[in-house]
Length: 108
Image (cartoon, rainbow, N blue to C red; front, top):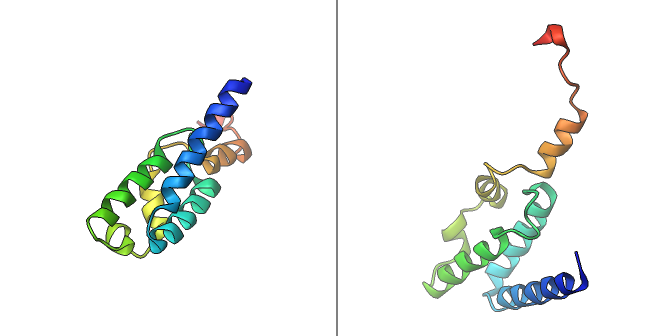
């Protein structure tokens, strides 16, 4: 990763953060909780993937339609996030694979 990539990544993150700050307060609170949860258990591709910008797109559309954030995602933020990443390899999967013993030849 070169300097130019770092600068471009920083510009993208600042633009993303500005979009989040423009959301209504309840959406910002839920987004912060979702981001925190996803960075703990989320997909490996989270930092440079389309998931976080996609959530902001979804929230912007919901806010423009006059819907509350609970109307969009329900009351269980973790369950909503888990559903978003259900088919993606996560850090938890990588960790679990690293501590699980490989089956021996006679255990297969």
